[in-house]
Length: 598
Image 1 (cartoon, helix red, strand yellow):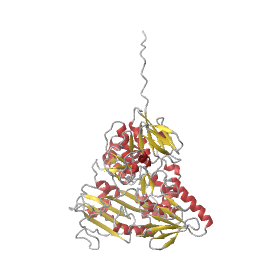
Image 2 (spheres, helix red, strand yellow):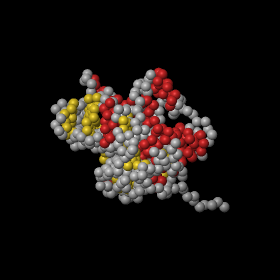
Image 3 (cartoon, one colour):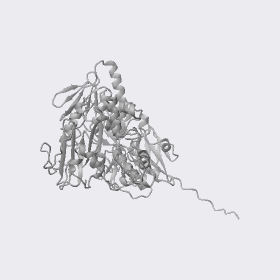
């Protein structure tokens, strides 16, 4: 007898709609697909730009000849996944929480079971007269930088003289924008309201060193200056800047890099709670007041603030994805460490860089001639690392940053003096639970297990397995050190190759450069290596024979060289956090363009 009982159909997958096409949105899609083995969710990503999510951190490489397609995030296998649909030029304009739907600018309505807001932020432009004149730009998206380059090229055809550009804002993106102008062969001036460059990341000593280094590159620096208007109304295009003190300067191009604001207009219009300074309020699991809506990245106000860095955004993406599949992960707080490389100049800060914690001591090494400033912030017994600032030479950053909150196990001054620093850092044995890659939340133990348990036998394999070093890249020197140490424990002969771009060891490469007399990193990699280089090999370009080597000085600990600053009790940092959001984003001729999670 045949059983006539109808067979129940499988449950259709729930629909997750992600609004935003930035780095954090991409990470969420990747994280959810990695966790959703049973295909419980289908994902639609709504990107308002005309291209796939891309690496906004590497935006400046667009000016050095890099194809924008090389910045794309996610391989074809992700975007061709039948459970993922990427929609470009899809601008969301409204949310109906009751109907659980999103309306697009085209009028199309898309239903959702779960909505993830990853809209990032938009550039803030100071309300000064002339800020919308042709020739004024921001620095945030590929479209922004393409428009800047096109304008400069067009302007150059009509003006036989050398062009001049001004960047309003001396933060991270302001300095990147100044570098972009230099790459376009435009004289650039950075105009900063604060008394020093990168005032949210480095102290007065570091600011002075950075100013000298930036000026030596041919970039003019003006600090403690406020812009009052963009000149050019009579001719209809930018011709200069006027400052509050009445001074003026000529400028053919002005780039605004004065901060960002969360793109929270969708949440506002739908009645979701908004933070005091903007951003969609979420709990530690990235859930809003509406249980069907999450917010991640720069648009999320979590633990009372918005985080303008890619690392915290990635953490939120992982947490939101984990919650959907039944996980219990919570936001652990943000690592606000940062490392910038501008035209070969290293700047890094980490931990309590301003010694705001009571009882802090500061150990300072400074060499104005070599353009080096280094500071470690320690506990009052000079044993536990609390933070630091590195300007001009940030080679110790990857090893020191993970040690924040832990005992250094050696004389702190030895980590700052160049000749002895390498030996001490090479002897550091990081515990397994020390975070190595803050962008992707990878600790030392996971890297070691990738070698010992998962059979990864080189740096490239470990990067693919753990994702360590695949975002900003600043942790790559430390990742390589951990990989090599673990390989040696297993008896594997470790290659002496500096990295995947050079088959030489560091010493061999330096000798080769000395013999050939090459004077730039691009020449070095073209002659002796391959690819575009990384944070492991690029520092070698700063040691070629055509440039002065750093000089060793004794460190400024008590009882040592009196010519350097001695440790002193830490003073409060006047209530300022290390970061106050993403410092220095731009505006383009498109004032509310897509996000750039940093």
